[in-house]
Image 1 (cartoon, rainbow, N blue to C red):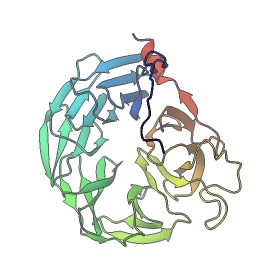
Image 2: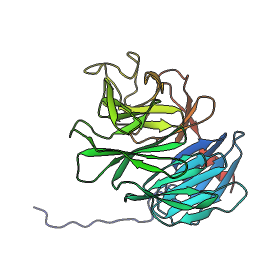
Image 3: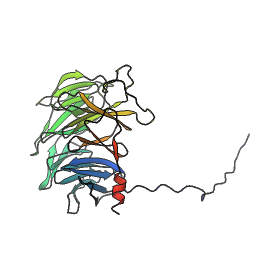
Image 4: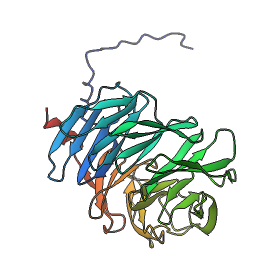
Length: 328
């Protein structure tokens, strides 16, 4: 039996570490024909206009902090654990608050920032932040409908959900508790127009008092989804035609199972019927709605497709790292 070994390591005989791209996309948002991409770890935001002209913005923030970006017609909001930033063309970015933000949504020009506590905040470029009396918990989904922000909040330690609605003037309404069934109502999210709550495979219409009226059951339990502007979408495992059939796909398709294991589907916002689907490599893809039927998605890279694209066609890859490198 061997009781010891000698290992000889040549520390010079190793390949060089790969060079980090100029920008590793972490989140994407679009408004007014402008695409905003924030880096996954660096305080860098890339602004790309309709002619693919790009501008890089350095935030006065920390390195190593994941962030989210929310486009508006006049600029974008950027949030993370190191606070909230306002970015607009032709001006230096401004940190408007250092309070951590766990989720948010931009309605018009303002931002509703969820803090994880019972006090949220609403930011606007033209006024001081407004405190909102909301509810503490995990924000599982947040969307914008007709300049109102709606959020689904899961209070910690309880099998229930509260819907929260915030108006553009800062009026915050918290709905009554909605019971959830363990191991059935997982990862609830909001989508559609009229607004629906999807919890598990159950789908319900959100009423004006923030209660939910059951409407239907999806054939398969989506693992994620949401609404971005007028775009409604879900993420499901790649179907195989067995227990739940091929939904949300229209029928059998050839799927390269070595490349992608998830399906991102765009739904008609009124009927929730599937419109088209594309393969993605993660169930936590970030989605943004562009102009004229364009859809942007981040699943490690920034990809682009159209709502009239063929089902399961590969989205186009946008070389944001190359665009950022050309600005050096």
